Image (cartoon, rainbow, N blue to C red; front, side, top):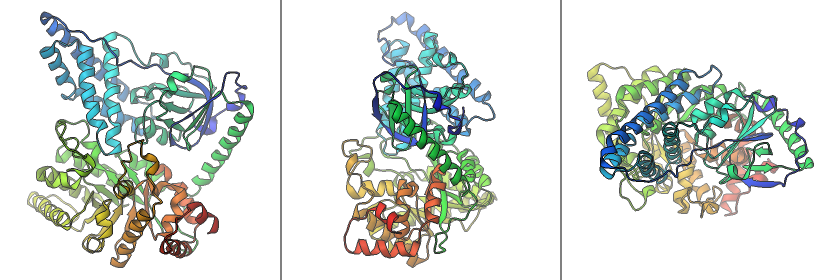
Length: 591
């Protein structure tokens, strides 16, 4: 694949077809201009019929053979990845391989064939729908996106049963110097591998969100992408001229000549901007008045630690450990977790690594059975879940402690709301240390313990938490959700999700100020930290540690180096004290 800088879109003639604009979620910034390549997809509306009892054995064999064929395809793709393939692809292919081998998918589908005499396709899609609904009900956005993995692996199994390939259209694409925009219902990791031979400038998909595979890989490649467009695959035809704005989430199909010219200029300006940003990689993150600001990265996969270093991260501010538990019937044991955590610690080579303990919701238990709860966001999730399962928690704590022998490790506890949760966590940590002492395993006895501030009650009564803990990390995504009583995943109330609400800003300021008084570092690891439009606002609230996706680090660093922290603190404090709304653009203009 070629980078945006190699785009030769100036050769695209003016389109004659009718223009249309589509709007989705921009997940990888940049501008791409090219011809559309529309990928087909396997329809999951398969035939439903009941087989005769004497056909059960052969029908189960047909499904088993197809599952094995799909697994073999995943293994072959994983072992033939080129050296220049995005490092995330190997891990994502592994996720699909695990799902194909997961008894919750395969065994349950086979049981439907045996017990209800479903045909193989019906049994597979029926079980896939159950799993997909469980993922869709999850509170955590990353876990919710994994429902697309279930659908994608089912598509590949159906392909194997039918003898066709949903990605066959990819095999027909010849290498060309013309820039191409991939348009698809969704793009699986396996299809991403197949796309490597052509010069794709961007991706546009019906499905997906910021944590979908398309988004993860596109960001790692610095290729513009817009997801969640709804029906883009059915509206766009092969050869249509497409303009893709990965920042605003806009896709323009067959634009007029004047619009093409305008976007070409925006594209060139953005390329120059990224080249300028690259110069900041090894430059200190310091404000105009000399305040040193920590620049940390959020990661979900161990391989992303290298991307953090490439973008100049001072460390890992949030390593989400959930990925180890996703799609698993058998929980990862202590050694498996230790290998994953220690890989990140070794890669960061002395830079701090903050590992968040398991943050999974009450909407799904670890054995895959759906739990009954009125509101998963308010149920037994995160630290509540772990304290209710002491052996699971102890296993993870021992693995994290063992990884601390290789570098600076900090333990972050999610969704803390009560002091007794801190005390119980400290007891569990002490017990894990005793276990390691008895075994003679090395670890850092001075490992730091911190908590996520994402429950309003914690932010309001923050003083004892700041005194008792070593550090605090503000999870703005959940803090906003809980403060405003808005489900951030519900499109019907998404317009009410407001990070600039005065109550939200006061809770953030209250937490940062308490940390200052206690001499404890406070970071922000939610989406607000990675938005350069909000950088000066957060500096004005007193923030000195930002944690975000690695690809956002340089954008935020640029804003930090152009800001006067103390002047912003005075300005923001005055506005908050007057009860006035804050306009981040006005802060940027006046300071």
